[in-house]
Length: 133
DNA sequence: GCCAACGTTGGC
DNA sequence: GCCAACGTTGGC
Image 1 (tube, rainbow, N blue to C red):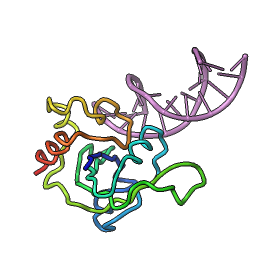
Image 2 (image 1 turned 180 degrees about the vertical axis):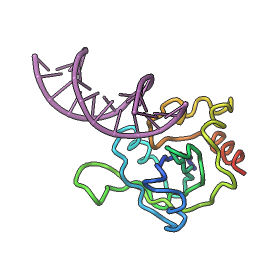
Image 3 (image 1 turned 90 degrees about the vertical axis):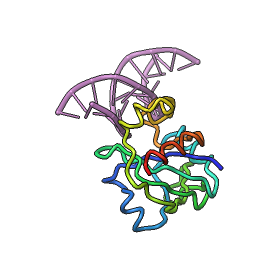
């Protein structure tokens, strides 16, 4: 079991919309590092859902419903995965909270601000989930 | 609205 | 293969 975090601008695709959809094709990744991480996702892996922009907070947990496959909307070599709802966080975990948490200083969210799909250690994932419950 | 970080493109 | 120019992301 592996753990990840994906970012989305709520104006583009919000957790609220995701909750309505129940399941979505995670598309639009156009960055090689992010693509590599996307392709590492296996069915059943858990994925934190982060709102960038206005919110700047982790708002829920998604589950990989289908591992990476060719983006059906384009010819070029980019991948998508299917994500389904796992569960919302009871309260959002903000970037500010993450930044002051010692054990989370090394996560990509902080170290490499622009990366949109990133892996997390199990302990990091569990800590953020705990902070949101 | 600004700017830092950083990825991509294209000329050489 | 290097690097300048440029574009994009995302926090502030």
